[in-house]
Length: 382
Image (cartoon, rainbow, N blue to C red):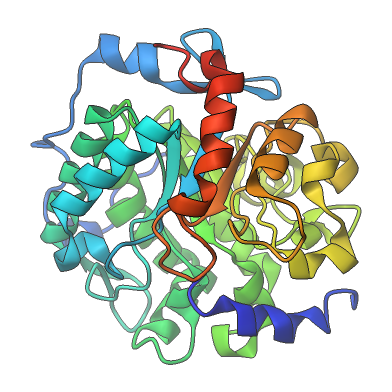
């Protein structure tokens, strides 16, 4: 999110104007990346993993055969680009404990906000190296999440990577638009990520990119065609499905590009498979919502996902929504209405107040109420 409201407001005026990798084999560039998988400190107990792993059953999430509802939040960062030198272990340990106590079972974390030092790219968009400290910090993050029974949605990229002012913006734009560079990113980062953390009971899902809408719409982020973005999502999702059991999503900034009711579903199974083969698909939808969208796309909490515009083929989560909203509704009303209308979860922005949209203090009545109403679906293993 981070300074997105100005971008969003500028985008409102144009709202209505309107990928399988085969057998993923490491590229030559990947050989230059430090070995990332063999010595992970994350628990590899297959029995524990099988019991806690989140799966999809039709339009529901399941854990050990029991339904899971995401009583979630966003804790996107504590220190921008935390996982590569800014990691504060005590914060995450204490905050995960606080979240679990409040009834929260999942949080969305940006494991790379825009850090060029985390995944270093060459001028041709291929990967030069992945910082070893990144892996070390993430090892500890997943260890802490497992300790406190918190599921993590790990967001690997954001529109911030592509934004003017980021020293690597041109390299990331090239990485998205060039097949060789995309494959280098997959071989050097995406596959090592799922090989390292794919057996962690705490890795619920991978969000390939935060709000690619702005990479498409905004000149300052490259104004890239969906042809490139969707092909990137297709290739990455196929690689993840071919190398792990992890669930994949894309945190679209608005329903506009996630629905044939509006501009089209650029992450539909049909479209992604046409770009990347049979393993190219999302396991669930996680569109975002802020009240400025209401006049154009409606209010999701008070209608079903299908009525809002999603295709009804898979679970649907509201992946971001401001804790403090201009809607006049309370978080308690929104969380309960979302549940009653068939959404599979809500993840408010944020739990730690990093972007002036509220924090766990304001959200507490909502998540604790949901915990008390449906505890068997929020903590199905307890």
